[in-house]
Length: 303
Image (tube, rainbow, N blue to C red):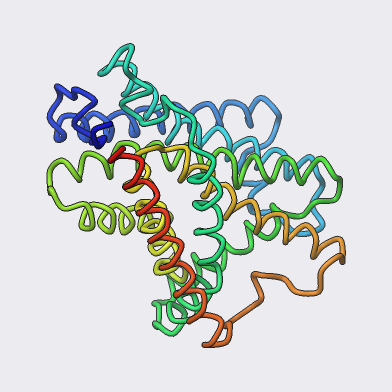
């Protein structure tokens, strides 16, 4: 079997055209999504802003569900729909191949990719501590605190079904939508233009982290984006980073749920810094797993 490359997709469109079209679709669909959210909340009798401002840990499940629904709509219209429309419009019947989701992931890639991301959690926590040592202006700090409050209030699970909703909102939909846009389209086309896969991976990771507008988490999110980017580059299958992305977000949601249910003692969000030894071991383990994934897929492509 000859090695698979992104050029095998018979892409007849210049990367600049693809990326410009993607940006245009994201803008159009985001406006449509914002209109739907506004109309839906007006129909329900209260504005999204008023519920968002009044959200706290004692808010009703109904208020949390309104916010969750709005986030789902926003994410679908910002990431999922633009990526799918672009692929279907430009590549027609080959749309799934263009997004590298046309084949199920190999089980070793799926398992190794998940362990790869989870092994990086202590390393990510260390980079989060490093990131927090960078002084931020007051407006950035205020925005960061508001975002953290929103996430913590949203992840409250008064009823068991809310855990499933939180997994949908924070883990499943973001894993699919963000990987479709950032790895499936952006990284792939930057790779074609720049010709250097490492530059494409890290540039995509920087954009991925920037667009979240969370300054204290910029470095760890950039590192996460790069790890997901390498998973995609090595395996050429977008399902691998999608599953790994879900595992990373889903584990944090579930840990938050267990902490609220008093089944575990520590809240991951409250851990300021992990020991240097654990961070170093995490780095070594990530490098070893990355090498194993690279070698595994190199052997597959050369057989």
